[in-house]
Length: 141
Image (cartoon, rainbow, N blue to C red):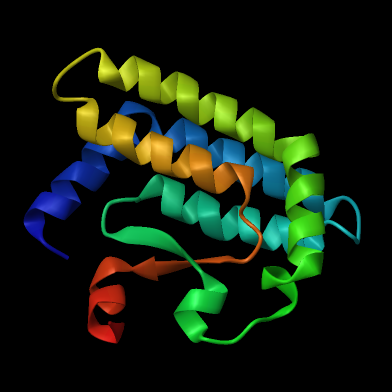
């Protein structure tokens, strides 16, 4: 991990990333209440961890990354994303959009706002995505 990436991640964590990471983990706990929601909850905890330290990580489509379609990248993934969007996705996206707007106010906050926008898009359709290290992604290409 580069020093600059570490500095950005620490600044992100202190200036709001911690709150949105907790929001993802809260969504995960809510998903674990029902047996059907356990896969959603697991994804929430993985994405929540990325939300704590987003610089140097990105989400990619699992079908594109692995080259094979699975349960989450097919029809069931589409249905899961629709259910997710209706119950929790919209609220997490609104939280990330509000945080992005707050970050865009200052020049220093622009990189953080861009990360919030990426996470807002991910919060709308997380099923079928995987989180990878950007260095790992570069080596796979």
